[in-house]
Amino acid sequence: MKKTLFACLLFAVSILQVTAQINLAQGLVSYHPFTGNANDAGPNAIHGNVSNATLTSDRNGNANSAYYFNGNAFIDLPYNNAYSFSPQGTFSISVWVLPDQNNTWPAQAVVVKAPLHTDFNMSAWNYGTYIFSYKAMSGYAYNHILNGSTTFVQNLCWYNITSTYDNGKWHLYVNGRLEDQNLSQTNFILQDGFSRIFFGKKGESNGDWYQGKMDEVRIYNRVLNQQEIDSLAHTAAGTKTVNDLSLCEGESVQLSASGANSYSWSPATGLSNSSVANPVASPTATTRYFVTGADAAGCTSTDNLLITVNPTPVVSVSNDSLVCENSIVPLNATGGIQYSWLPSAGLSNSNIANPVATAVATTKYVVTVTNNNGCTAKDSVVLSVRKSPVFDISPAADACIKKSAQLTASGGDIYLWTPGTSLNNPALFNPIASPVVTTIYSVTITDTICRVTNTLSTQVKIWPAPGISIQKTGDVDCSNGSSQLTAAGGITYSWQADPTLSNPDIANPVASPTATTTYFVNVTDQHGCTNSDSVIVYVTTDNRSGYYIPTAFTPNNDGVNDCYGIRYWGSVNEIDFSIYNRWGQRVFHAKRADACWDGKLNGIAQDAAVYVYVIKAKTNCGDVFRKGTMVMIR
Image (cartoon, rainbow, N blue to C red; front, top):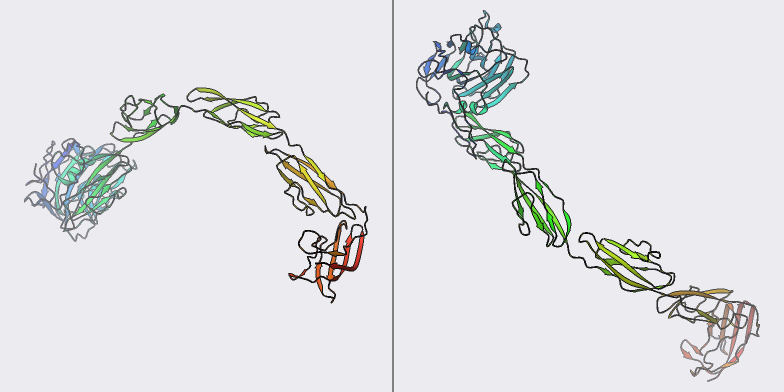
């Protein structure tokens, strides 16, 4: 067997390798290496008969190691049942070609089995390999064909064409790469039991002449696998190793190609860059990557590798759980054959699927699970450690009669209060207590995680509502315009807002109603308890007076008769009160019944003299008009 290094391009893909065995002798029907002749180097000695084809250099530059076909040359093989394949059978054909340029006829038969027909256009070839418009073609007859996609560079580059057949399923490869297929299961080959195989023309018929070089024709009675097709496309050595590899889901690997000037990888899916020699591959599923390299002359060749993506383990772990301090907790993980837990502290064994953990503090345990493919996945279990419980209850509380207090307990997850009759819910940790008398409440607290129970007690003291007393100085009549109210029994007082009260936030405001009015007061004692009461101030027309007007006043700041005004006029609804000096100048004017003159005009004390007053008023007891004189004495 001759040495067949690919002359146009030799490149290798180097990666993490998985070795596969290739046996190119298995199922070999006919092998024509063209080493000085067209003899069959296979087991059946089906030697070729050469007609007009001439020996030439092969793709590696070796003299007399390939045949040149001038467009009127062929090599025929004697009929042999070994290559008369049935429609339900299997076979493969591999051949190297370097087509001449400018062949005007588009169809060129390379390896074809076809019966004789006077019109070669009507001859339905049994099966074979063609070049059509400088692209590979395979199949049977003219209407059941497979077409390649690579356009051959004429008179310059060698190409390997491999076609396979399996009970109606056709595949066509160029330089090891699948370019077309037909899986219809209906397009069977023709089997006539007599027609021969021809290299360079359309079988027994004259036509579809091939023009160019041909080398290394192989015919098998089985379907070649991808690794064997790769081997034939790149070297004629009997057995070689291929650079397939395995990854785990989510992993990446850097590929590497050499021996060419430019590169193109496909499919591009999962590659960092499909146009460099060394892309990073991150496939999500098992993928065969093809790399096509081109040399300076434009000749191309293709290699490929299969990246098997193995699944990561489907990890299942025990649930996160709340546990009591220092308790013993079994952990569990499934989904693999090896297990590694971290942190290992507190575990009985960190390298088994089901270690036992001693819960000292809250810990997240992460388990790395490895399956039989060597792939790993992680999951975690959180043990939340509950410290030994500390039970507590709210301190004693005060409450006013008919009011409530909130109780609070803590430290457990089950609570039961007694007595429960005055509670809104005795099973809450914070019930509302509404006792009518001072009551001691007890709560039984249980921590179900740590299985601890204790009973604590607290008191709610009930204070009575404050006793209230209210007094008034009298009612409002024609002589008295106000009444002082006085409340007792608390420490703070709040009278219902009323514009006739002098101050609603004191115990003893002055009430000046113009109509009979009920005054309400809320009293709060030192315990925060409240009570309310009311008093009525009546407004009447009793106690009519002469609407007394003073005759003199002494504004000397001694606190006696320092201000001149009206008194004992009862409830005054409207008033217009003016004072004039002896020259008729108004020195005082007011619209309020409680207003008085201090003997000054614009802040300047006036002389002691006789002054005239004029008063117009509307009271509950009628309209009043008074005019007269009075004396300022200093």
